[in-house]
Amino acid sequence: GQNIDQPTEMTATEGAIVQINCTYQTSGFNGLFWYQQHAGEAPTFLSYNVLDGLEEKGRFSSFLSRSKGYSYLLLKELQMKDSASYLCAVPENQGGKLIFGQGTELSVKP
Amino acid sequence: DVKVTQSSRYLVKRTGEKVFLECVQDMDHENMFWYRQDPGLGLRLIYFSYDVKMKEKGDIPEGYSVSREKKERFSLILESASTNQTSMYLCASSLTGSTDTQYFGPGTRLTVL
Image (cartoon, rainbow over all chains, first blue to last red; front, side, top):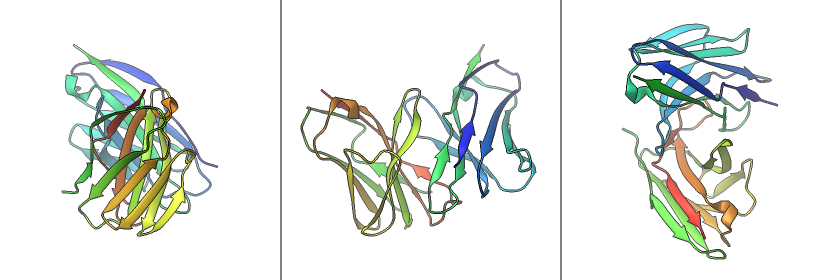
């Protein structure tokens, strides 16, 4: 089977850096997605990693280690608007489905 | 830009009513999905479709059915709504495979009284 673990909640300060971790267990691996979801809104795509290493996109970076079954999302220069839930997801081995983690609720404080 | 729209943002229905939730995407995507999202339970897949008239059960299909008569439209049907179906319903679409990004609609907040 496939399983994804993320911390339930995190709190950070405006202007700081925060790292949101995700560990996964899959029988095959086809990449890992990160989505952002603000309260009451739909998830929006942030990143997709299929190779090991760090990919940077502005203030957001995503890291993947396939050998460790581990990914993290790094948010720099935190802003209040970054308060949201961050969802980690991996594609199912067969078929078109994504397996989502429970999400990490990030609160950014002044 | 991919656009996924859902028929209603908020819906209030009574127990036993038949409820239709509609989803339309404008990017010629093959795959379409229906999820529900509840606090503490995350996103759970109800049904998905990888082609017109094709459907597959997700993790929690009980009490739901779906219809995909046209490529751009995927409907979720609650045959007889119950209070435990009060939830946020999210539709998504993706191009073809599981490694293609899923794009989500704005969601429908359904309350069953």
